[in-house]
Length: 572
Image (cartoon, rainbow, N blue to C red; front, side):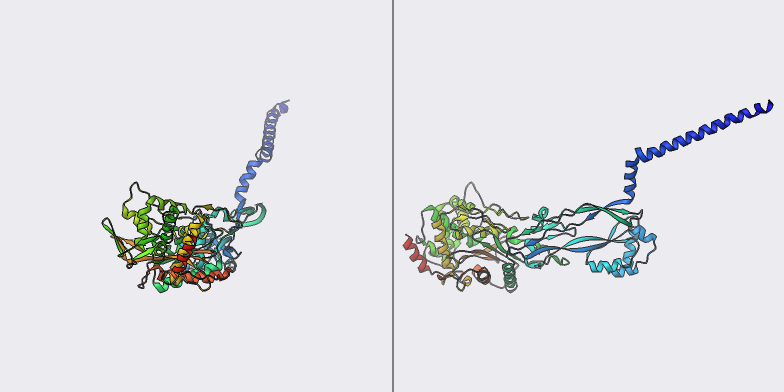
């Protein structure tokens, strides 16, 4: 009896412990079930964050071609070397061999690693050749890794540099076509899921999440054969004339395509160690210049359109100087009595000023606007200049006169070429383009066909004996053109020490195929007239270009002033 009473308290304690164990087992089972079922997605995601990574699959930019399918810009595979400084330092790796392979100073490398000791990622060397990267990775230095990337390469080098532009180290467009069409050329990087340990070491690749999509290709209107020719001749001219800069634009008359666009100075986009900002600028599109006498054929076109003038209307330029208010307009010498054709042939400031004062500025400005001055050409090139076409409530006589021979307004070389294309196209305005056209758009008539043809015929006398542009003559092809020379603005107004010489030519004149503008900025060898510095460049580039394009020589050759006068009498 006494023994039973003594065991009763122990039985209660046993049941308490038994119940506690059952409760703990129940809670444990519930917690395990909760972790495996209820919280599984959350926990799996948190675990993946510490082991699963999404790596980028690089996508290369689209290739840029010339009109004949020759590559101008391509993307080549390269490798970038990076490091996890914390891991590298913790492993106690000797960086001497690594520094040698990277071609850097070992002391500087150690300093860089210590300065970034708490970071998990720093670049050691960007965009190197795969073979070089392979040698570096063969050292198997802990904490050193590689990334596959792409780098832009330009086969034509400096020849088309300002036009094509360049990309930055991350393959993003920064200048020129590369910037203008960056969205089109840029690829869409892909992703692949990889499994890594806590130190970031790759354990295995899991799967491709999304494939990389390369950028789209782009075919320009540029003909590299003509571009090389233009660049070579422009470079020779700048060197021989000791000029500050120069530009050249060549257009296809029928399509409005830009066949060549060269500038000096230039730069090598494949080697930017000595990159000069002045060489990056595409002067043919971004620079504004006062056109000077190359504007005169358009002033004459406005006069013919008015019906008040013809090619043989007499203009008296005696005695070679003319007072307009307090100002004086002068010719190089006294040309005496000229007709309208002679005003073009001799590039008479007095003759064109008298015509402009008779017409009024509105008539001239209206035609200038129709041929594209003061507005964008539509090529969508970064930094394109629209130039300046002046509008005033009241015009002073001297302002009207200077407008007629190319002062007081500004244009880009491309705008000038586009305007002359109207004359070459029989009065039809054709939009220009930097992209290859399979089917030219329909142009807009802005000038009577007979006026365009008559002005074109007058311009042939500029290249004939007695004209100002005889050095633009071509063997086997007729040429219509116009020379221009302007004084540049200085701190105290127009200076006599710096000039811009230019020439605009159309060839062959009888069946126009190309329009070319040549601008020489600040020649310093004593020559500065457009007929002396720019016309010879036109002759060398145009002659070879017509042969490359397969244009057959014409039989007419250049026309003399007598030929034009005879032509005008027949038409009259």
